[in-house]
Amino acid sequence: MTTPTLPAAFTPFAEPRRKVKAPWIALFATAWFGIWMAQLTPVQLLLPLQTDGIFGAGSVESVLAFGIISGIAGACALVTYPLTGAFSDRTTSRFGRRRPWIFLGTVLFAISLVLLGLQDTIVGVGIFWSLAIIGFCMASAAITATISDQVPVEQRGFVSGWVSAPQALGTVVGIALLTSLPLSQLFGYTIIAVVLLAAVLPFVFFVPDEVLPKVLRAPFTFAALIKGFWINPVAHPDFGWTLLSRILVNLGNALGTTLLLFFISDGLGRRETAQADLLQLTVIYLITFILAALGFGRLSDVIRKRKPFVYAAAYLQGLAALLLAFVPDFSIAMVGAGLLGLGYGCFMAVDQALATQVLPSSHTRGKDLGIMNIATAVPQAVAPLLGSAIVAFLGGGVFGFTGLFIASAVFAALGGLAVIQVKSVK
Image 1: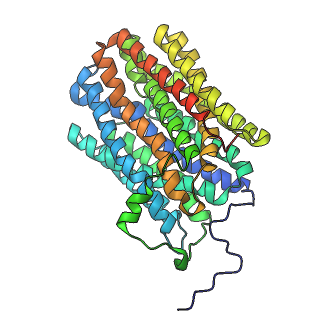
Image 2: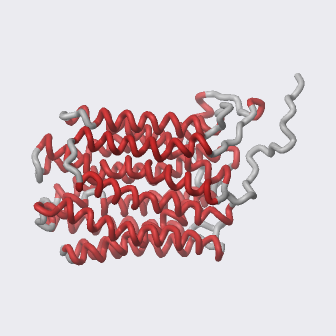
């Protein structure tokens, strides 16, 4: 059998050398803005209000229901991230490997959000939020892989900052939009879905994606697919330590943020102003997060070091959580929000760049980054369940949230220790 001839300019799975330009970065950042707004605005505002509407505002049942729904969604993310990455690695569409998955995931995400707005039972909320998270994971797994596919190593800290910075911006814009307008539940979810489509689809339509020739697609077996999800931490220790660090730091961050509306309302007793207070804290977090993500991401490119930034970022988040734990006051919460933004912004940008440098194989970038993405999405989904259990176990109120924020600090500190073990990246 004659082996098909490849185009002369095609170098399969090669590390990119040409820097991406400003238009590419602008479309990339805009896509992430839409993705993060659609994922985090429900977590921070819409879903808590929806569960409050079902069980009653301020009830323990509402907090627990929110946690259980988020935990189920986290289980969906656990499967979807690596599956999407693995399938996109093998996709031979004429539109490229990643773009079809970004498109399909975005459409599923948007439709699920609209249908979520129609739900008035906890079962319906759980089903459609899980479908929304599946769409979120499909889109974000594929678009994350474009960093390794198209961005050279010396530019990845800065570009990864544009994954992170829109996270805070999308959250605050979403919360500001929904709290400033008298919107119904359905209309609120629908607006978020429309913004998602408008933000992501230009990246799909206008950013080229290299086509994988069918001759280079590895034979597919279900056993090989399942086996590929296990990456031996002994054979690839830097991947293992980076994954562990990411899980711990993201869990610490999520414990400190996902129940923030409940903390303001019940822990600080500011129920009448809780939504406005949440917006104020989010704005502070936004400013420091963006400055840290873009500034430290770029600085890590310039000095060619990643680990010191990741380590310091983890402990800065731990400090913010301890302030919230032992000084439960709204003015101190504003200081904590600033420190948390600095720490998590730095972590998200630099750790993403670090992750792309410890992948076991250039042939399986999508699948391996999908596994890495589990460490971001699953803690965010599981934290409400774990956090609500901690708060409920400790009796709620100030004491319950003190325990929650101590746990947040402990996980962040352990994540900082884990990244020290990485040897192949400075």
